[in-house]
Image 1 (spheres, helix red, strand yellow):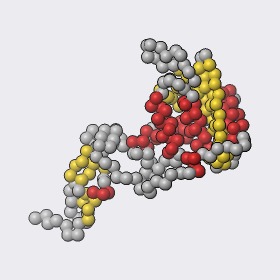
Image 2 (cartoon, one colour; image 1 turned 45 degrees about the vertical axis):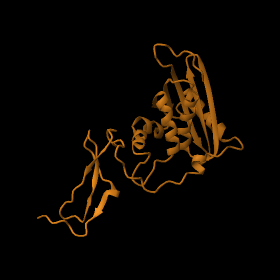
Image 3 (cartoon, one colour; image 1 turned 90 degrees about the vertical axis):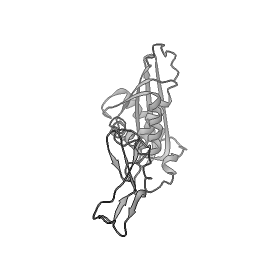
Length: 233
């Protein structure tokens, strides 16, 4: 969507985007619908995939809406998916990003490929996500649902490559490295020499510590077994 009114004052054009997505069954054929509202224009978009999930279609709808914009905008996305709204507004996605797109030591977030795309778009635009109750008579939300349902019933839907061909990933998150952002405050972490403690059969050659909030991170590759504990005298 071309906006020709990017004012010299630097105020971003304001856009409202309604989104919805779903599958029948779940997982199964899926579709998404988007309604984009601007004071001077209204636009719709939809699409579908032959095999996907409800959650992926909800995320993809937000991606599709933002990809319709041709210049940075101030955007409010209305979604009936608490999964999407909470992930973006409660900081889940930001936390996964700080951890190199891992949730836990041995677990990546579901739908990480789509979260990465959505996060990148949110770096271009000023985006706020708002939850709207689904099937409650909200006009544009109902229209998005209609668009999504029509889309998923179309013949010859393309594959959702991110779902059908999930890339192989390491089973364990790599150790944090010096200079990576702290998971709590995003300050680059630094190395600090480790110490052996009496009664333990191991020690860490070094730890990583945040110089700002003092959070300490153990680095498993720096762990060393002690066959014969050092003498205390």
